[in-house]
Length: 79
Image 1 (spheres, rainbow, N blue to C red):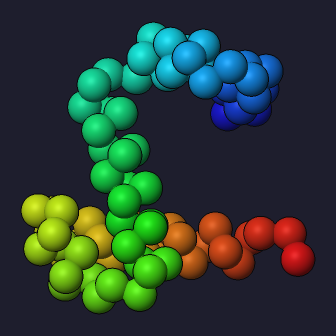
Image 2: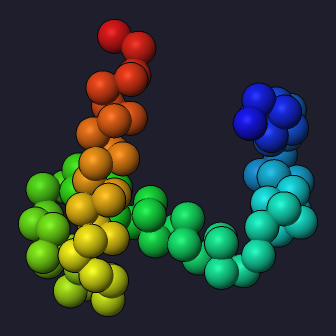
Image 3: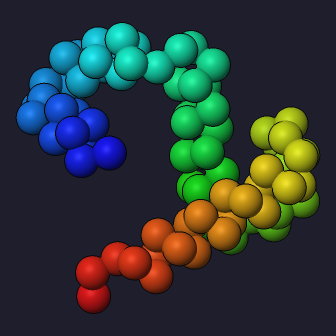
């Protein structure tokens, strides 16, 4: 995982980073990451999990998983 992080962080140009991500990930993987980011944004905006599932056309379990992941991220952020 560290080599992936370093590989991506050494790229400062958004177009070059997009090229790297397109080379590393399938279109479905990219779409899934974008969906997870949408879930995070909606959760942070206070939208209910049921409403997020409805808006994005995903299952409630997907949103719940995103909610747990976001909570873990916040707990592990440097204070």
